Amino acid sequence: RTTSRTASSHRDLQHFLNQKCRPGCTVKVTVVREKKPRTKRFRGDGSFRILTIADTTDFRRLKLKDLLSPEPFNVVLVSTSILGTQCHHTRLTETVNKWLREEGQPEPCLGVSMGARQKMLRECIDKWHQK
Image 1 (cartoon, rainbow, N blue to C red):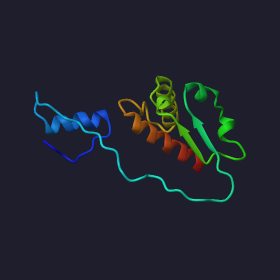
Image 2: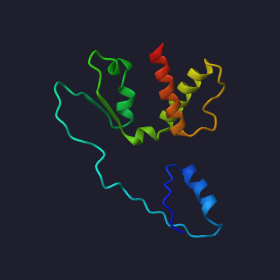
Image 3: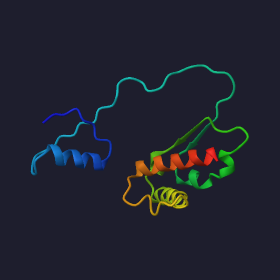
Image 4: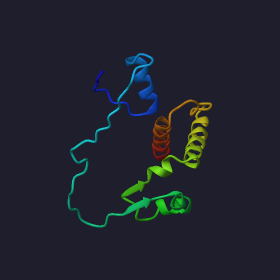
């Protein structure tokens, strides 16, 4: 059976398979990259600062003052190998839980996907900036 639905995470894929496939059937998964470029080139004025974090060693060396320097980074590139580490998972969960517990939400990360936790962190940071 062919379908155009895209599953972005393991949970979405499992839900999709449970809905569309009978037990014992064979599933063929094809991953296709987009052909069009997702970036555009342009010429600007002034400096452009990029911070790259390649591995957990770089991540551990990073200090908050590096991110809050007088000339902030325009772009921060983080390797997906860091985003998949248990250390990152634990710190992100602890941070979000601490911030949202202060707003009266007990254990907000319990049973929530990593993508949802990252969105929750972004919302917490936005609220912090508004204060």
